[in-house]
Length: 322
Ligand SMILES: [Zn+2]
Image (cartoon, rainbow, N blue to C red):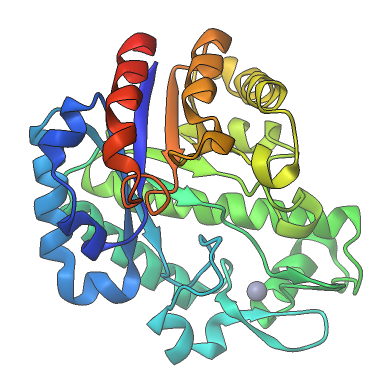
């Protein structure tokens, strides 16, 4: 089993990490958060770090965050694009503009693709991870009902888009996100066709709310936009038994990807605190047959004050499950 580390803090987090030490601890991959507003000025620092990780023998995955906020689970992330182009953002069922660009807006798609091509040129990496691509949804309101979405829906169904999320609307939202991911994959693969497009469906909401989510992995795994599927196991926040959650999440994801021979990456939250049971989770995942496990929560793990004391036992466990 390959064990990876998610480095979520942007360029300032990269400055505090030494790729050779991470590789010596046994990490086989890193997932680097690349924030839109940071990449304008500090792309070179991210590129240097990515090169150093590759040189140390680790696989690097870029995780673009911001960039219109379609791919972004964190509501506090900034996106200059969203601030400057409200006209290309999603409109919810109450007629309000949201802080998320619309995946059906041609102007946004062009800007997004061009930015992903640039990022793919800059970073030496194995692939890109699209983190929880979703439509806006909150307390009874949903998006998107912008001109482009309504026009597309009308062209497909010969009638107006309803105000409720009917099955047709749910399918339209899902297919819109899959088309967006296809454009995202095409953008990075125009630079290097070997770049892997990894999709992480949201785990905190259902597909009816978000458009695509971990409760319906089949259509996502079937899409040619998806080179590998990544699934988060939120057992702590969901109050689930860790072993059952890790096993069943992996089995569901592997069942969806197996027929296409696509890779499955399982994510667990981690910290040195015994309540997070990180070492046990690694052992359980390895026993369940997981091939690639990523540890989320760089802030709670490598940036934690207890990390130095925890490192030797983590490293021994990574060695054992490798
Ligand atoms: Zn729209």
